[in-house]
Figure (cartoon, rainbow, N blue to C red):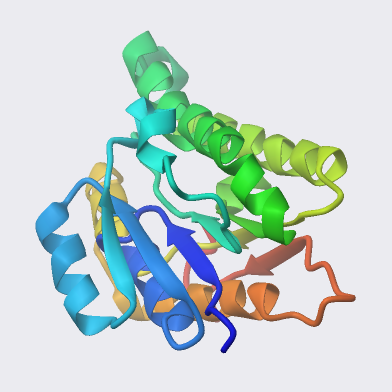
Amino acid sequence: MFERPTALVTGASGGVGAAVAHALAPTHDLLLGGRDREALDKLCVELPGARPWPVELTAVTEADVAGLDRLDVLVHSAGVVRLGRVEETPAEVWRRTLEVNVVAVAELTRLLLPALRAVGGHVVLVNSGSGQRANPTWASYAASKFALRAFADVLRLEEPGLRVTTVYPGRVDTDMQRGVRAQENGDYQPEKYLRPDSVARAVLAAVTASPDAHVTEITLRPSAGPAG
């Protein structure tokens, strides 16, 4: 009997990460990464074959990945955003944004490269429309997402035995988006945004593409409302 492939999903306690977990659950054993252990445990009850992986991504170490010697899929979907004009954005906001959105991604990927190489695995980075176009008040977040795009491009070239996919969704109906709209002092209209499961289906399409196909980038935008 063949073992099911294993996927590690960060940011799995809600939003896009939880939707990706649901999308992969029928075909993959899951490690669900996040800081909210209660939310992870609840999701694991819903998804047989899933296990919680409660970690602080900015402090992940070799001990956190010990024993994980084979990994088929690594999905990076955790992130933070703090809006503000350049003149209003202090260094600590830049540091926190880059630490979570870029440095933690790079370090976790680095630690898991042996496990990914062992099976010719797949790294999926949930980026943002802000990784393709920068707008006023989005400097620190856009910079982090442009950096994440560059990281994916370099990883793809350096690790030809892996598949590396960047997904660029527009605004998604999540708690993070509610926070963004509060920062923008705007109304929250979920019908104008992508659903998390729509992004998850894009991730699933990349992961399940035939072996001869390397889906390098996917761009999604809401069919109505802001593209953000």
